[in-house]
Length: 125
Image (tube, rainbow, N blue to C red; front, top):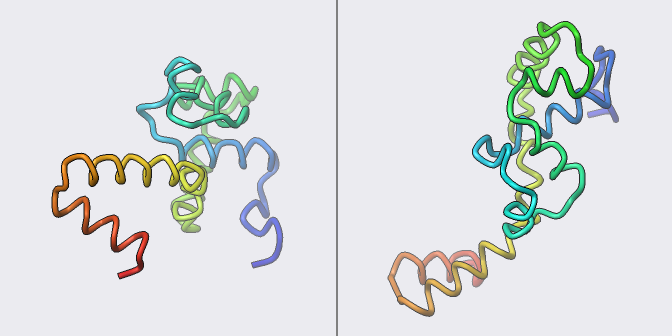
């Protein structure tokens, strides 16, 4: 796919990119205190600032998007162009935290499902 093909035809490409990232972030984290987010391992300024925005209306206001149908069009485009799989790249940075938690649980409680998950992920079995 050519560079910027996903934003072809989008007038405000930087705002669209921010919107795609915002949509990819878990909704339950929106509006959480910065300290709580940092404790979860989120430390990128752009992610932290986007999580301050709770709703699409707030997003539009923050980015000075006066016509709310723009976000509706962006939502359709995100869905139609299959951008959803790309949207979870932020979570990859948290994988070490998840693996650590899995290790702690598996080593502390020794439940078969936790140990099996560890062996499948880490040992590739």
